[in-house]
Image 1 (cartoon, rainbow, N blue to C red):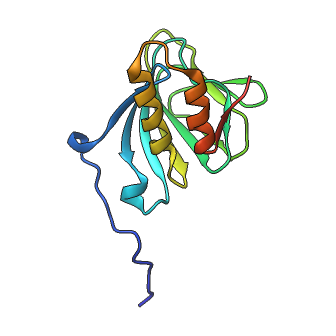
Image 2: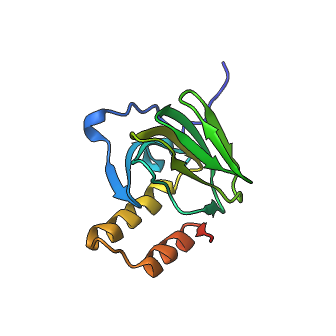
Amino acid sequence: MKEFPTDVMPYVSAKSTNATLRAFGEEVVILLSGANTAGKLTMWVETTPPGGGPPPHYHENEDEWFFVLEGSAEFFLNGWTRVAPGGAVFVPKGTVHTFRNAGDSELKMLIQATPSGFETFFASCAEEFARSSTPDMERILAIGARHGIHFVS
């Protein structure tokens, strides 16, 4: 019988135990974190209001992929591309990207990043956004830099 690594144990995400974080006008529900996957990946559902989306950015550490569950998504990857529900997008680390909700109802996507770490970045940003309605963007940029996530204009 083949031996398999024992550093990762199976994990079932229960809706009642999922962390919900809010920053950048987004709601992120963490389904799997680095703590659940031995640092291998993070998986979350992201809800974006009409017209919303994160600033353009790139990740030093994580590859990221998106699966559009509902709504109207547009991704910027060397130009804007519309992605309908059921469509998927892969963004390798180092690629400047963003997305936006191009519709008039909520956009919901299942997103995964590997390795894990996005959840700690987003939790730190959520703390900053919870401080006031206008977060200190210098702090947000510093949080991003600590996690290898860089915003570009």
